[in-house]
Image 1: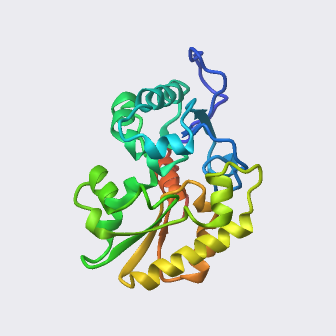
Image 2 (image 1 turned 135 degrees about the horizontal axis):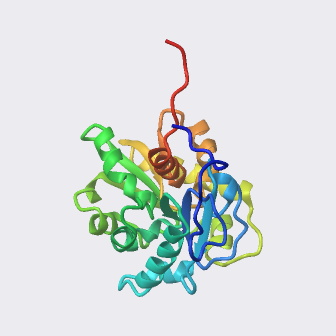
Length: 253
């Protein structure tokens, strides 16, 4: 059944400042140019999105938050989004896997995918037993096989990781907090990272991008590596949106 907004009686939602957002995005406290494809850009989503930043949760803070110091603040941001009426919640940092369980419990039954890494169990099921999943991450000094195993038990041995922490263009924006983003430079660095990863680990059968800035470059990577399926925050967001707002099929029998 098609739902129309110009029919029926609608009640005010306490605290709402806008209506119609279908996916909510928990954001780092991070000031960057978010290009289309980045999870911080509204044009990335096929349906309306709402955004909530977590004060103080910088890039460096989330990389170091092994103790979960920001868990309550992330939960609060997600609760605000849920109260605003979103149908699903994601984020703009793969390291928010740290808070996945707490947020999912707090906003249930709203489905939550705070990290692109939550797709790993599905990828492992899709691939043959010997196939490995190549992860490109913002920082391989933090995200390694042990990190994956901590949050997704049984999958640490299935991944091969390559980090962008030393890539100059990526580092300038993401770690040094530069005012400019060199999209062409980052695109080359991401393609080069996949080339190095696949040379080092020839049994990689699929790619997963941890960083929420990387969907902007997924098509460029797939053009260079057409036989590798590429999963990222974009595929996760579309999965959540499709599952929570199905549209009827229209056709001919």
